[in-house]
Length: 133
Image (cartoon, rainbow, N blue to C red):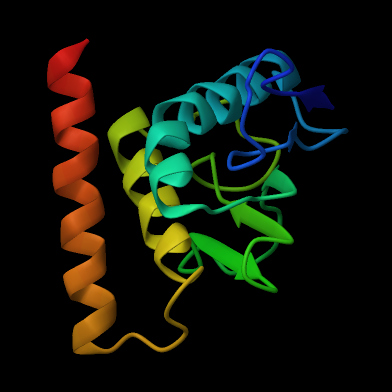
């Protein structure tokens, strides 16, 4: 379990990252979660969003890539290809996009036109942040 942003002045961020406990390469999984959380932190601050726990997803439905529980109480994303014991992680860009998708659920529940418009806005914001670095 990793706590993030102790130096951050804002509560609008990911507060904690958790990789699967019994999966291989837990350190790499935690590092991916922390990298994603750091990348989206400016977006979260601007929109005043807080995610209490950002967790690696486990489960048997490979089509389910992420889930936002209670508008940010927890966000889960599937980091690995195949099963939870895989050391084959999904590409960072795909994981980041899944996180942006789940962040959209902070404001909009159903996958509506408004949802996809917000997702496009977040993608553009994220692209700008990446370009600055």
